[in-house]
Image (cartoon, rainbow, N blue to C red; front, side):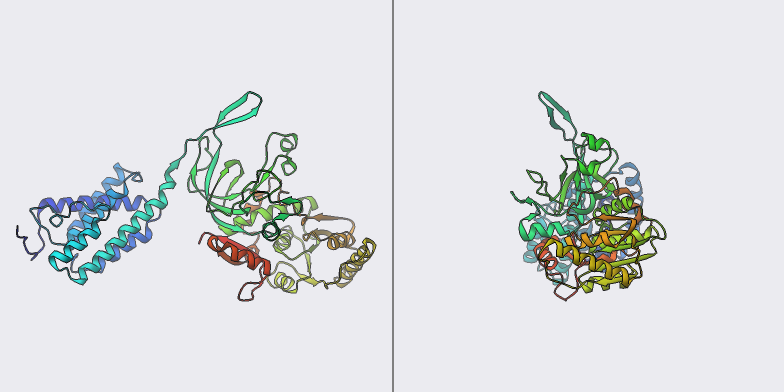
Length: 508
């Protein structure tokens, strides 16, 4: 059968109305997806790049707008539309404007049928062989295939955003006390994770203090992300909520938990800690399931990176509460790492007027003063380890006297925040506090010392009361380069020689 040559646009009424109808259908499908901005842009570029081909489409555009309005009212949730249906609609709609139409075989070339699977590629081949398709049309098809691939990618990425998982667990509470209950968990796509000193200890030594790695364990516990699915019994959260992950999951049943001292819960399972066995996996993952009782919504003005700093910030907030920092206090911070600088930020937010920071690393002290975390900084000299405890105490006292004299605080500081966990600094801290002052030991290697401080920490970020905090993040690495990230953290400087203060693993 001879095919008619394509000499002019054919205004067959059925083809015309059908084209408008399907145009509206895939337009609605686009709009219903969660992340289609780039895809819609691609389609617009595809059409606008061929002005002569689409010059006659003004009437169809008007009808398409009408159909879209009708569909938007009648069919608000198009997330269940199969990708193949959208693929076919998109293919047919675009190709009716750029390909010959054979009345005897419908509104696509004879023998093509509906495009599904790899039929776009098959059609390309047949068109090239049978009709000697020119390179311009093949280029159009390349654009079309990329557009279709983008649409299917978007649908895959957003399919989880419409999930509500029905899942129950048989939980044994005691002998013959088996209860069926929803676990109350949510699936969180992790967007940012800060690497901590305890993570580095596990990476380098396979242990952190007395907690030795016995089985493979995911690291990371300073994280934030977005909820991609919710389980049964969850009502306070929804898909799309941005959350900070509280890494310590306590039992909520023991006496200490009920007294509000859950940081002392002996049954706590802390993410990325080998303290418990089987170990509790950490948050250096693409996605995790986590109890919603330990997820905290992030304020709109708070970034994922700020939210991932909430875990160490919560430790500092708890310490500041114990110290009772208030306006006018003179505060000394020992240790200019990430926790030490957060301690300075919190002290400043509470009105401390004289903030001095101390460390043995000159770059860190200079960074703290330059970026406005502290008013002044002191660099300690590196000295040999004392041979006896008595000599260690003498050296600590001498260090304290030097700091007090240098900054005119002979009677001592009102509050001393010790953030190193180093014995000599812990001893010096006592001698730098005034009589009746407060010394709080933060750098004790216990990352779970927080008491309901996550909401307060997030509120500080949301209100903009910690303006310098995000300056702590000095390096970013994707999860795929996590080994390189740990090596940089271990070296203390990156390949460009930039000092590491806080290294962030992100999802990009």
